[in-house]
Length: 141
Image 1 (cartoon, one colour):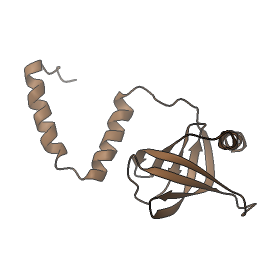
Image 2 (tube, helix red, strand yellow; image 1 turned 90 degrees about the vertical axis):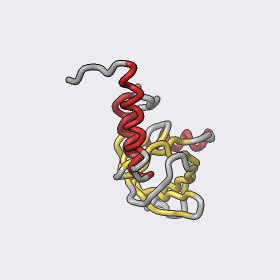
Image 3 (spheres, one colour; image 1 turned 120 degrees about the vertical axis):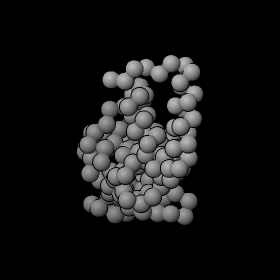
């Protein structure tokens, strides 16, 4: 293991890091940030997640795509998708029920993490009906 950097050396290291960071494309910067947060931050997840495999439509602005929910909790979902999304964007999730195509459920969320396989979405201001729906999905899946 390397010796700790003294205070005078920290500014030199930070300066070099900033120079390197300025060369990295935005998408890769977000991936790097996600990884650093994962490694060095306390866990921020408030709710246990349950594995899932359910189709969902994701809508942000004028962009719409389908994805697959990989896990779900009372606080959010992870959606496997190859579509590029922006960190911090508001998103509308339309849950798709193949057994009852006329039944649809929409939930507003915010993209809180992006990685190469998909996006993590935190649910925003759920109504009582939406909370009940999410709880039922966590029990069913």
